Length: 88
Image (cartoon, rainbow, N blue to C red; front, side, top):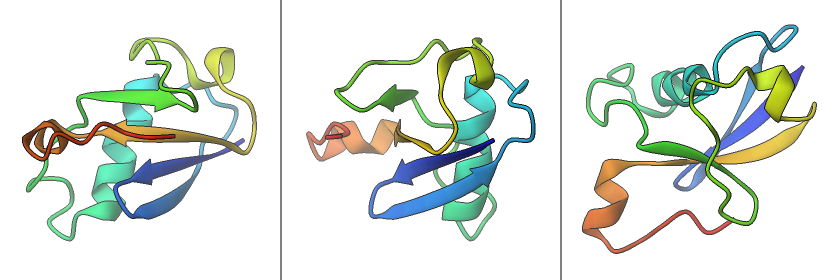
């Protein structure tokens, strides 16, 4: 299973195996790829959203909530500073 996580201007393809990880794992894994300090600069995303702005349950399993090759959006705390929300 592959999920595409949008973090600001980047799209990060994450291989999820059978998708048994929690949704919050997607955000944390994407931040490791997005941030050259391995996620320490920005921390964990505030939430993960599907297209249309639907917020995902962070404790749900990826395979139960998302489809293979689906795109999701990581919303960062610092995005609020710019009054920007993820706009899928």
